[in-house]
Length: 168
Image 1 (cartoon, rainbow, N blue to C red):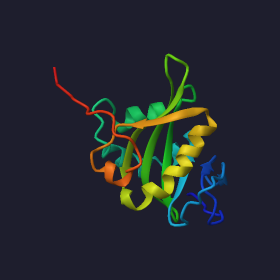
Image 2: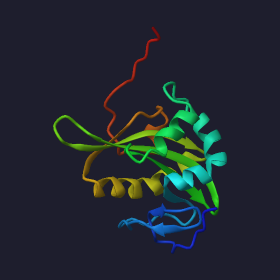
Image 3: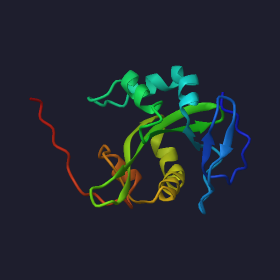
Image 4: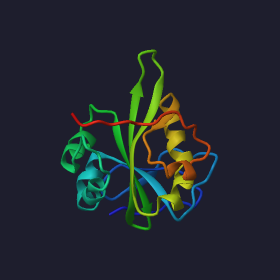
């Protein structure tokens, strides 16, 4: 299980093994002690899979299943990461992150999915830590495909596109 031993002003934690959670990198903006973002390692994903799998099933991605996401998330050669939103010892939500490099050499953070409980309660508390982490990897932009309701939660994000889909 995740053991929370951090101070209330620690902003981002890194789950580096099954029983330990360490501070990764503080940000100037503190995260509420209610919700903590934890970057999960492959070992932690494997250990907590029984909790994670049902949440991934709710993502609604047509190009992945929980088991296909598991293979990607535990592959050390893929730059896809899973952040768990922790309250106490419980995983309340998940964020999928991907570090991408554009053809022009720019690095972007792609938020591939957000799923879980009470997103509107924690999204603004967790966002600064996630963006700080991405900046540490040289990312200059964050993008994501969100449902329209996220515009209410993230009003400072710029709306740029509508996503159209057609089954063939």
